[in-house]
Image (cartoon, rainbow, N blue to C red):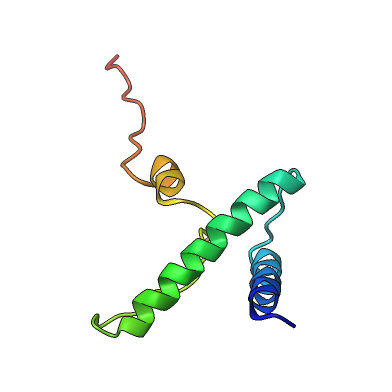
Length: 88
């Protein structure tokens, strides 16, 4: 099996295992493909970062691995304040 096909297959298997672990489902094939590409890029970044060995910590794959930084920031950054009640 050519290396590119083998790498792609193992990435697809890894993504499927990740989807099962985090109970992920996508509304259609196009969304799944888009998120798979993001997942592959994030896994590549994580593996590259960890193999560098210059930091005292390691990154790992989590439930947000199919999101871009922008998508994550849009939904998980910032303090969400409760609306203030007006004094009675």
